[in-house]
Amino acid sequence: MRAPIAILFVSLLAGCGFQLRGAQPLPFESLHLAVAENSELGASLKRNIRAQGGTRLVETAQEAQAIFTVVRETREKNILSLSSAGRVREFQLRLRFVFRVHDLKGREFLPASEIVQTRDISFSDAQVLAKEQEENLLWRDMQNDLVQQIMRRMAAAKVEG
Image (tube, rainbow, N blue to C red):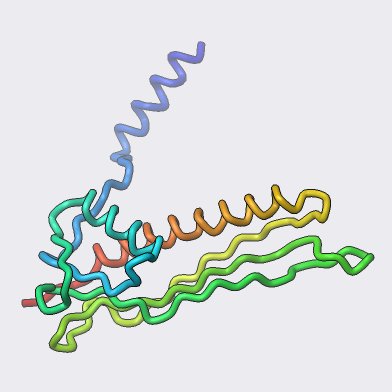
């Protein structure tokens, strides 16, 4: 009974033109990432760009067609709610990232763009270590989402001449 339903579902999806979103190539021949050498975000961006192929990562801005510059990166942890005893019950994690893509001549391929990621996390004094690990996982998840959004925005950038 399940097999015919699954076959029907798959054929409907195939017939409507549904296709998973694949990696979009970046419109730059060469790119310089102006990020800190020990940046996790920078390392993740480099991995994604190399995996897509087509765009060469260069060491200096002079060699690059485009330069990726981090304008601002902030991490915030705000209290969302308190218990009746005045203890924290819930936090909100917020990652704000502002970047731009330009060339040495001052042309903007992507003007300063802000991406904001937020996650809510409950807190318990009885599970401090577990909640700390959960928080670290959420920060990493937010960073991975951020990298994917940056890649999509760079793929949509318009490069003229």
